[in-house]
Image (cartoon, rainbow, N blue to C red; front, side, top):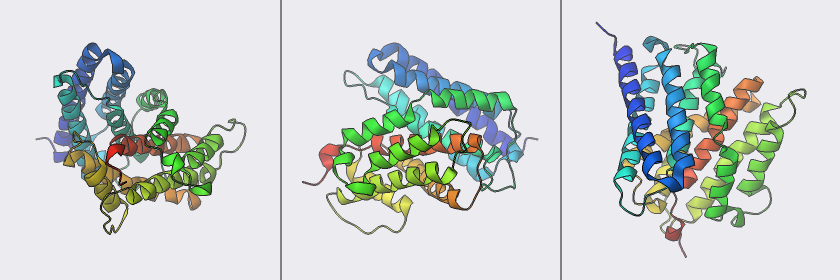
Length: 287
């Protein structure tokens, strides 16, 4: 009899397969967004290889559930886009969301601040294959594009400008491998770029309301500023990821990270920023 975790693994693989099929169709019928569809397909294809090599009991049940929910949401959003007539949406926020959650799964194999109980071990080649696909996602460039689209770079001055903070993180990350990569120099500006973006969006809500933590801030922002096509399940996934990302990026001051670990977290933070900003309809900003 299969364990619950092995059943969750099979369910996740089925969700990923659905995303692959819908992404392939999205590519075929939406010529304007071929690049986005191809990234989603490639991430799903590589993630399928990684998940296939994980023994179910090696990853916590909560992580399996988070992955299943995220991939189910993504499949639903791509299906809806494929059914749209005329005004087909760009799904950049979907590939951002998937890249965020899947790097969260990978980081159980490497990042020292993650729980050591249930650490996932997978063969090196599937993980590297997935990371290589993710790096082709151009997440920093997409995050910059989203920041400019909703004009967050014009809403903050000095060190709180999210675009400047994002540039600082990229500059530190792109230093030659021969030089020591300081995790604080990469991950703290990246965390601050996310926090600054969220702080600006909070001020742009038509109705101000109190929020307790980062996940409640994501819920409040999305409730007032999201596109109509964004569902409550999408928001729950992003809010859940926000707590994980905040904690692990903040840990850069206390933990030593290898170059590969920084690579994972840099992709994770940038793709998360893309997914959060990608759901924002700036026509809903308060006047």
